[in-house]
Image (cartoon, rainbow, N blue to C red; front, top):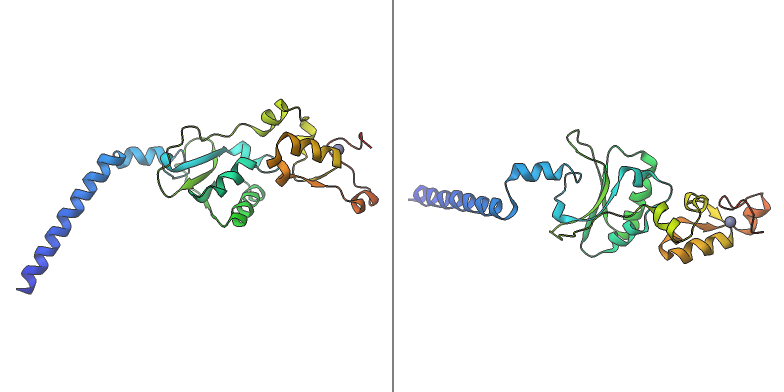
Length: 198
Ligand SMILES: [Zn+2]
């Protein structure tokens, strides 16, 4: 008697499982196609990606303010970084994720395809059409910021250069600090203008 009931339960579970599997395939496409797609996005579903940086962008000086902004997005669940990225650049973005309280995962898989350096992803489909971020140098150059100042990200700059970069893009404040009086006393100079403003 008991075993009959158990058998019945098992049968319905098996059937239900087959049905939900069929539904899943219908909704999200065949699993093997999804697997290939995921290899372009560090193992994540394309539909869950909020923002993406290329490997080159991740290893540039400074961080992309767009990534900080995306991490603050309520839909953002975690930051996923390619294991091909150097330690220093990984740590730059890991500390950004830590600050916002989001998880940071480094993934290594020889089957990965393409040039994706990192992705900010949601736990659900967000279906964002354009997940790319324009190159910092190009974007800031168009706003009249000279390359030396763009490349000084992560360093201490003079007041004038600080004002220039943060007026061009207020989000860039995360990449620069102002030279202090003590810095100047000990011979510190602005790497962006080499003291031309003083
Ligand atoms: Zn300067």
